[in-house]
Length: 110
Image 1 (cartoon, rainbow, N blue to C red):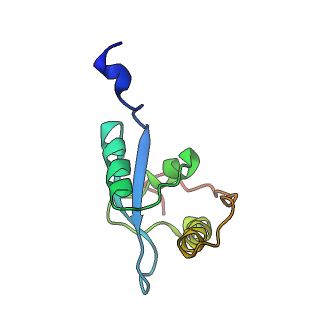
Image 2 (image 1 turned 45 degrees about the horizontal axis):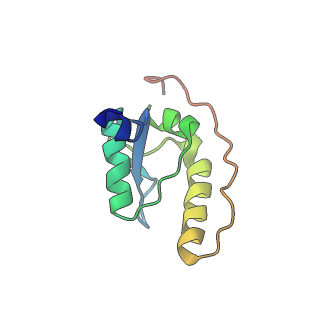
């Protein structure tokens, strides 16, 4: 058994969002692939931030530039996820919500 066998698998991609009351929409504050994705996840967990695993949602969020707000097409799905996270914090959440992901326009189109 080599030392590499003890390492956790490296995640493909990760995106970190921030949202504060009064913000127009959540913003992408970090994103990356491979080791950078793993670092984003580790830092979130160390800070006590819930890590939601949804490769499809991450794929859509990877299209958003750093420090940019999420696109309007993702408002509902992110709002549903945030509402569920607030319920977790209050101790009222039961199961992960089923998130319906909308298609996004290709990068660079408006």
